[in-house]
Image (spheres, rainbow, N blue to C red):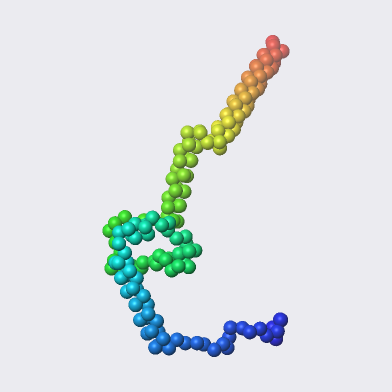
Length: 161
């Protein structure tokens, strides 16, 4: 037996079905209601139309309660317009914006205007200076070695004479 004992689950319940007569009655009532709404809409004079237009539109919650919610229109495949420019989806728009932002950043980076580019240039300047110092030091050591070698050669030749 499951933990907590047997609870009234959804299985085994009696199914209730709507009879065809009830469905037909509901359909007729719906058609009559739509006819009445159309007749009332045609009977409204200009003042009433303007008054309705001046009223604020219902909020989503009140629209759902009053039944004024806009229904989604579905189009058939034959009604779709394929020639005109298609609106981009949210993901496509975000992807394009992301690519444009990356391009802008790369332009600024190459121009040396971003923080990262400034840090890179400063680091490169330090490295360049260190390499110049190392090359100068190496050149001085080479010259000192040559001078020492020349001096040693000169002493060596003096001692032979």
